[in-house]
Length: 475
Ligand code: ARG
Image (cartoon, rainbow, N blue to C red; front, side, top):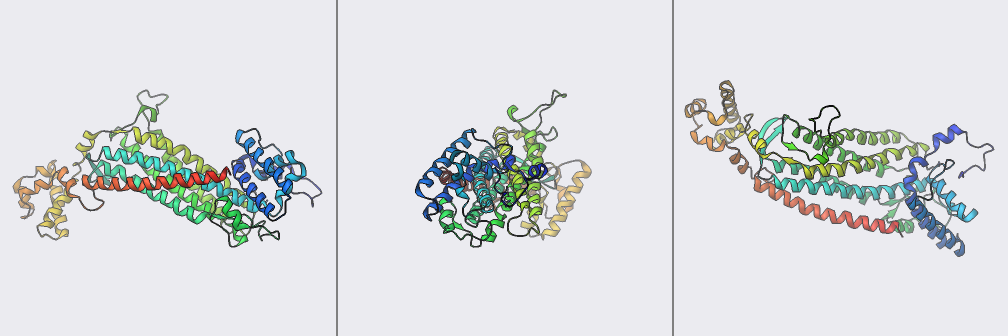
């Protein structure tokens, strides 16, 4: 059933209908549309715009429709244009012309903006919960390897040794910024467009602030034109999702490297690795690769909506219908990647011996020589030069730094005494990095414990906000 047509003498061409139809993807908004219809009904009743008897029938019809939508017994049909028209058809099939009463004082313009916002809040809170599960997996794994030395890299070259727990935990810190971003997004995005109508508000005695509160928003839009035009909440959500995807992609790259034959640091559990159809020996890190690859579509979804919005006139234009598929796709993508990635992290085992053996190679202790000289009063630039000469000599001879003889050392610089070898150990280098945030095992344990406490706080926040939100959905 079309929601318009009075002023037309001809029905829509098939090609137009096919192009403009959105119910095949916007049906996921149905529970939110029903929720906002129930609130709109109460507002109409309060304003005396729907008689008490009629109100009770419409409410019963909406509740029935809600359980039919939930069970899948009510579904859109070919002739439904979008989620709003499909649900109005459902209600009209039950109530006759009374099913159209809810259209008073509202438009699909404020309706779709409201539904989308409710959907995005619901989904983004769920993403936050999944991110927290991954953080906990990473932090527990970090604790297991807090005493495991490994090479640390810059430019993907051996730089300075670090403890491997430090390397793993860094990802949980990036994810903490992601959940914090969702929290601040939430505070900013809980504004209700409902009551804005097509664009200008309504001559009926509606109460946008009351409907905002009934829907779980904190307030209503102060400008009705802005209310129906604004998709900032959606773009910001897409950015948050793209950044989470980019974090997962960088993690994925590390898992690919670490599980390669050349590194041989990471052993993936069979359940979280794949084989090859032709090479029987293969065990591939597909989860890590897909995480790396899917960051591309998450970034694409963000840019496609930004491009659609650029230069778009206010208030509603049909272009805005293009905001949905990218958003839905970003959520379904991360809903697939996050649990798989978490399972992979939980079950990966790292080879301590291999990592420890690699830790001092590549002259990764050269900075220790420079720091040793600085402590003896040599300016750093000169100390750096001296340490570089030590590396140069070792390279010529094919030896490691601690293998330089006493006379090699004094020949390079008189301040280089044999006791410099004491700082040329991985354990010594690690233990000395006690600065806040540094790689000394004790400092890393502190970092992990502090972050675990912060994660427990955000965990409680996400679960309580989403319980509250889903409670309102059922009301
Ligand atoms: N399906 C539309 C969308 O997703 C709903 C709003 C349609 N509004 C209109 N005036 N045609 O944006």
